Image (cartoon, rainbow, N blue to C red):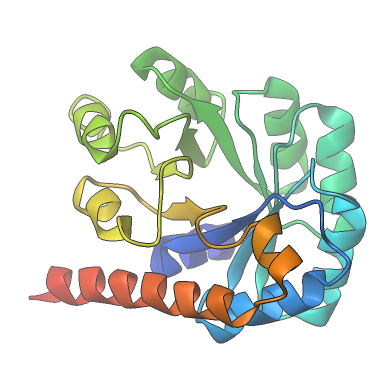
Length: 217
C-alpha cells in the first residue's frame, strides 16, 4: 500500500484503535474483537509488552487491516516499528528523527504537538498528520480553535477521545481520531470479556457513520 493510499484510508475510515497493553498474550483475539466491531486500523504503542512482536503478529494475522506503531521516538524505535510491519508511525512529540525515518521509507507519520507553533513546526517538518496531545482537559473546542488559523493541518486527537464523544471531535474538524483505553484496556483483558470490546467498537463505528451521513445531507 502506497503512502498516499494509507493517508486516504485513515481519512476515509476516520477512526483507529490505540492499543497500549501489558497483557498482549492474546493480541490476535483483541484485534479480532476490534475488527468484528468494524474498526480495521490499529495502532500498537511501542511501550506495550512485546510491541514489535505484536505488530508483526497482527500484521500477518490481519492482512486487510492497517497496522501502525505508537509512542515512537527516535531512529531506533522508528526503524524497529517499520521492520515489524507498521504502516504508520505516531509520536507524542515532534521527533525529527522519527519523521526523517518515516519520510525516507515512505511511511505515514503523525507527530505530536499541542500549541499552534508546535503544530505548524510538525507540519513543516513533514508530518502527514498532527496528533494534538494531550487534549483530555481541553476537549474538541481546542481543535476548532486551532483550525481557524491552521485549516490545512490534519489534526488527530487520541487522548480524551471516548466511545461516546467521537462525533464531537469530527464536528470540531478532526481529520481522524484514535481511541485508546476507553475502547480496550488491560482491565478488559484481565476480565476475559472480549465481547465488550467488540460492542464498544460497534458504537464508535455507528457514530462515525452517523457523522458521515450527516455530512452528505
